[in-house]
Image (cartoon, rainbow over all chains, first blue to last red; front, side, top):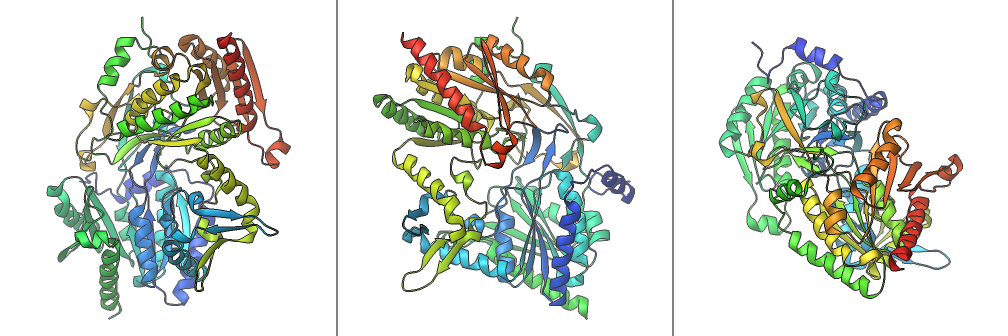
Length: 317
Length: 317
């Protein structure tokens, strides 16, 4: 019998048929296909990084929605380290979530800009901020100019799922050189379209009940049908330690992908567990690491790249 | 009998008692009090602008929440025009929503920065962007250096409500020279704390029902108790034309404040209706206005400032 976490093929097929694609999905698919084709020709490894939360509209002309907590730090930071490891990155992210490199710029850049007027007006960054900002600008320009970073946006759960399918199929064309790093925080619940009012729910209608259905787990078709050749890394975020590694192992058994990165909400910036079918490895930043500005995504991505490399060697034997 | 839109004093009092304040609220209150006191001494008018959506957590250690659609364009843009009209602005906004002036900077500023290395490395803005960016930087610096703009953040509905009470009471100290411009998109619904699980809801628990209670309308205590002397402007955002002006008039009858700005979701960037107890005035941008970059907040804030001025004259008679 199918459990909520392992939908049958028919279940997710009919779920997918109920989704209404955004207009721009065709254009996004073309961009991703061109990007992966170009890098396949150069034998560059490509990783699809998903990042940020998804929204679930409560009304079809939407004012209100359900959201997941994620500004996208994990995804944006990991994308930078994948680039530094020589990967080309499809950065599939929630609209307005954090972006690689850009996330390093002070939130209010206006505070550090100075206007010098003259025959030619010039705007410069305050000297005190040049040391921190110059490497960020240079890295960003380098990867941008080399065409190593493709930005693709989503907002709703529907946008995310339909785009993920296209992007995963595109990554699959790279064979074992493709990787998928599922750092987005995807809603476990959705509201069936037939239960959604067209107009804004009137507050005068009084208290409300919302019925949320379970989103079918897309990891199954992703691994089995969309990208069976790719190296797939999923995340487990929990708030309860006791469930963490068990749930990661169970996910690997259920979906047959390569790696689960398990983490707790409270310690996710300093500690992660890399779980594979036959290993379990904790990475943890020390206090002095944290003070020196080291980020957990640096050792995490390094280890994942090693795992990917081993896996490529096995596949090419 | 109390209807959902007009809570009795006891109802909102007990609702407020159930809210758990964030740690930083005391510090924020001190900042706002100092800001309003300073501007009261200089006879500067002060407006409290609220901006962005609120979140309603579904779990107490929160991963998921309900959200309202608003990146805060209305609030951030209006704050700029209030500053240009000589007002000091308390900009009470959702964390990571748009900010005055800063919203005008290209989303990826890194694209327009250039690093020139040398004995002294310099970072400059590309000449092609100087024309647009220089006035933004100069305006921002002017109001910042004059101490005319105070930024205060909230995230959840609870943070918003508790902060609004403090800020409104502070504005009230300015008498009729204070104004409150309620552009934030506040959730009409909340989840009672006793119904909220501590840990992340497990997706294995299957489909879920959410019971949402109505948020008491805070406009009533705001006008009656917190800021009875202030000039208060609220917003009505609807998706259905037929309800728009009627609902605005009804709100004025119920809450006894000065102005409702009514707008439709689809046309909110080009058309608003300013509704007072004895007038109803539509402001609309023409196509050529839109092409020339004119914003509806420019005539909107100008008219509101005129209304506020008239109202001050009547009050000081």
